[in-house]
Length: 96
Image (tube, rainbow, N blue to C red):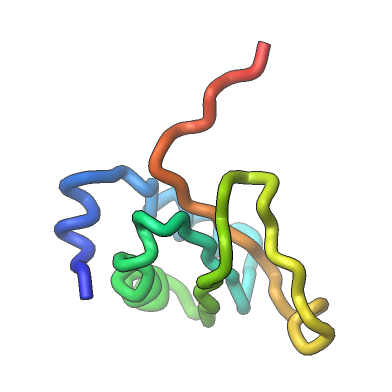
């Protein structure tokens, strides 16, 4: 398992901002989506976020090829997930 320290040395996932958004939205069940390169850090991110919030987390291990690649839920999760957070390697480029 990769550690949060290793993650922070390579990437800035703005985890404090994520915590703030979770608290602001009062989300109880959050789905986290990671590209393949960040998936080894997924459990470390969940541990950090769970420690800072009172929320529960699901990790999506399917594909994540960008912001438009949102998961399709089955009936059992369709109305239960309060918030989806997608992480990426790069910042979004502004559109002009």
